[in-house]
Every structure is written in structure tokens, then in C-alpha cells.
Image (cartoon, rainbow, N blue to C red; front, side, top):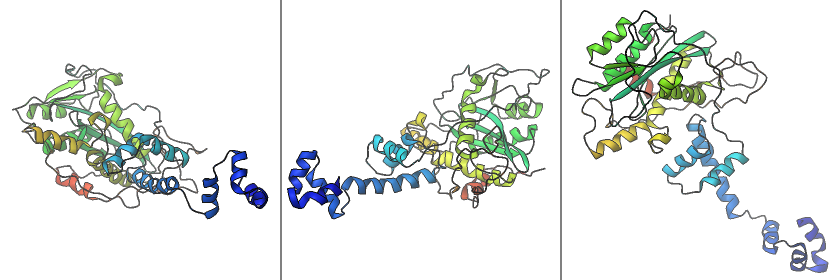
Length: 359
């Protein structure tokens, strides 16, 4: 269009040609001058912010959470603009995928506790209801298992452990970390909910719960809805961290997981909490009144950490395991976790977590 106007402007003039072609003469003059529009300049600025926000949050956010994160940083912009820019530039959040792999084996001889939760995953204060579970991970060295405990009130991960086996010590270490960090006592009622796996019904585990006066609750066998909150956490963990990245060793997975848990507690926006992180949620509730007499970390300050800078790989013909990790690295793949040691790892040790020894 501009070329046609340039060729005939000497004979007919710019305005008559634009009027006949039903185009804006001012737009032609602006394009001819080489000046970029204000919208183009603003889109370029916002795109840089979107890319930075997307990268520092493990490339897990879609347009809605990215928009929320930008609002928290003081950028006042419509959600549709973030959606448009992300779609136009191929910026996407983590996609859920994978097939289930059985880690829960019920012990038929174990005495079964009752289900005290009845699929009501809500709590009015910290340390009222914990949910526990564990999942598997794959790397080139073999399998790694990740056990965790979540406080339902704030969705905070209060205990975790990783090991190369599914023994009772895996889940017991996560429980001891949670008890050491949150310090539940007899002055409040704390319910610990898990599935019917033999690790959670073992003598050592149930005795530890009894020693700390924690009420044990278990769901049924083969029903993910009875522990839906923990299952949802596993899905988010594998979608946002594990999938589309290559993991060479168990140590690499451990360091990345500890850093991700710190990000999950201190920085990740949770829709169920009003799009704020768990620590900030507990801090705000603590200002409203003394809701945590028994060890809530509501008063702790968020900590910065190094970020996992590895970009996600696009799905290709390479074969994948059930949790989304690839068997071998493609030629254009970067290895994940080049620098993953962070203050979160140190915080995990100082909070009472046992150091993991891979056997």
C-alpha cells in the first residue's frame, strides 16, 4: 500500500489516494517517517517484562498468572494484552502430561485408621490439617522418590525428603522435618492425612505421629480423590519443574527440587490463596490475629534464590518416560540445573531436614 502511494503521490497527492483507498493518511506519513507507534513501543517493553517473569518462574506461568505477577510488580495492564503478546511470541505455560505410576501399595495386615478428612481439604488455621504423599522421578542414574507434607491452610510445603528407595525412612524424614519446622503440640488438634500406603501405616510412622499427638487419617486404596490436594501438588511439581527438562543425576534432581520448593513457598502465586504465595498468605493472616501459636512460619521473610534458567524443550520425536522426562538429550538440548545451589538448600538443612544420602 505504501509503495503504491509513493509511486502516484506526485500525480494525485497523498490525501486523495488515501481517501479513495480508505486508509489513514496520518498512518502513511508515520510509516514513511520510520517512527514506531506508541503501542508498538509499549508492546516491546511489556514483552521484555513478560519474558523475564516467565523465565524466573520456571516457565510455568500461563497468561493469567503472568498477568497477576506483573500486577504485583506495579504494572497496570489488561489481561488480554498479556494474552495477546504471549500468544504472538510463542510464550506458553507448562502443560500437564504424563501417565500414572503406582507408588502406593497397601499393607493388608496393617490396622487402618479412619478417614477424618472426607475429601474436605480446607483449614482455618496453620497446623490444622496436613496432607502427605510421595512420587517418583526419573534421571539417567535411575529412580528418585520425593516425599512431601503440605499444610492445607496455606498450601505450604512444610516437610520433604528425597531418596533412591521407597522405604519408610523416606516419608518419616519428611514428617520429622515438618514436625521440627512447625512444632505442633497438644494445645491444638493436628490431623495428618495420607493414602493407605504401607510406608504411612508402618509402626515407625504411626508411632511418630502418636508421640507428637498428631491424629492420623488415611484415605482408601486406588482413589486419588481421597488425597486430591496432594495429587494436585504432584501434578504441579512435575509439570512446572520435571517435564521437558533433562536430568542427569539424582543429586541434580535433589538440588533443583529443594530450590523449587523454596520458590513454591515464597514466590509462586496460588489461585486458591488469592494469587499470593503461601508465606505471604500466612503473614497477612498473622497480622489479623494470633492464628499460629504452635510454630507457623508466618513471620519469616521471603528469601531470594537463584533460578533454574534452563529453557523447556519442545515435544519432538524423542521417547519420553511417564513423567515427561526424556531418555537422552537431543542435540539442541541444554542440560538442566547448571547452577542450582541456593539459600533454599541451606534453609532446608537449618530447618531440620536430614541430608540425603543416595544408596
